[in-house]
Image (cartoon, rainbow, N blue to C red; front, top):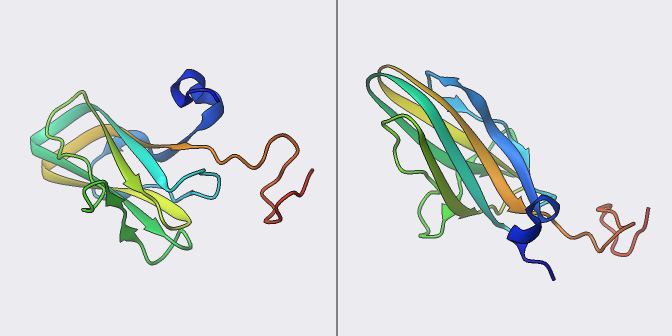
Length: 147
């Protein structure tokens, strides 16, 4: 069995929760399905570039939903608190958090504060790909179904 990091491309699913952009108001990222994730345990990466404004703050957390549009609740991090990044107040920062996704969809919620704040940033989901049983297997819901 290969180590996940020795073959990251084949074993990991990378999805965009919030596209790289200048965020100036509180923003909900895109809903990303978790059906292809092989485990409930995921990581999220926050990458921040330029920051402007007077006393700008950026708080980012991960939420989950059964249908991807309603009923959003905070995912739990390893400490059983909301899966949230440490508050960002300066440029050129990167953080990684781990959390447990228990519903069909996840998203990032970016909350900005301060006077005319702007954060150029992106948020990404990194998870282990689901092993559908090898080549020729599908995720059609029936174990052993081949293409």
